[in-house]
Amino acid sequence: YPSDSISSNEWFAQSTTTHAAVLHDVSVALYTGNVGSLEVTLRDSSYRLRDLLTLFSFPVYFMDYGDGQLIGYGCDGNHD
Image (cartoon, rainbow, N blue to C red; front, side):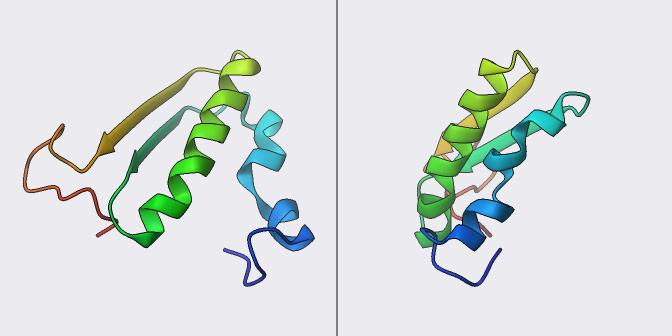
């Protein structure tokens, strides 16, 4: 990830959502949760990328597993 703040021009330039159109021939699967500071930060980006890919009519698999209870296997919804 860029080391600049999330609102900086550098972050925007490196963001996957900025370059979503180039993913037209790539199979994309997005998984996101809502526990822990990293997951909470990345969750909104995952939703934005999913929405952009859908807008471009690109196939995307998306799963928001929340706190992990949905998928089980000892998942706690954190990025670990």
